[in-house]
Length: 339
Ligand code: MN
Image (cartoon, rainbow, N blue to C red; front, side, top):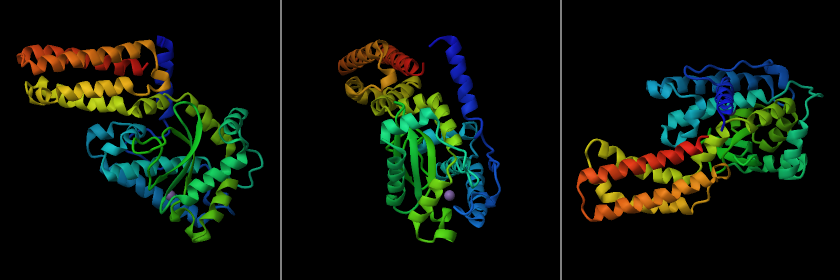
């Protein structure tokens, strides 16, 4: 990637995360009043949902971010590795992100003006045939979600639109989700989103929310997601075999830096196995380059050599040089994936 493109990408990453920023988090401003979404969503539900439920996610997230290292991360970075965070951070970071999106994509009624952009409509037709089948799929995803959760329209790293759902306050940015990407539409199917007006009739609520969607905002979300560098970060973080290799590398290389050779002595065979898995894995589309293929081949070769000399009981110093080289090679791959 040329330098100017890199600067543009970094700049748009900053802009892309601007609305959610970093700790301490705050409720985003609503662009309409509580009554504005009636009759689809009643004023009391809007008020409690926004000023009590969402506020609680924000407050609990801020309370949970006592570690300055975590507080320095953006909301998206917290979500990306949600599986490695505490449940409190996972649930409340998700709750804050999801609700911020939900408020944004609702429109005051009557909305006679908003409609999907041509680009979004083309993409919907490509993935679902037409708007009706998208609506049907979203409603199915929302109705079949047992208990609390969300239904999503998501842009995947290979730039396809898909429909999925997640439990609780999880979302498709998170490493714990089976379908990953950037959410374009999120529909809250927690009972707190509809119970006052619709009681147990989730289907009626879903039909009503569909009428309250702001397609101008959703089209803008789609356009922004297409160029959001987060898409590539998600793609890389979904590459399981890369992460698996990284894990063994971290757990063997870092002890060596502290002169503890035991993990590497015991696990050099695993380094080979994970490198071979990586070589045999499906390389995500945008990383499928000759440079990366070549670097992975060299990783397998390097790991195999290291394992071989390890079984011959070479001195620590010799092993250290090898693992340092292998570590550099791995970071070369990591680096190539970030361009
Ligand atoms: Mn909610």
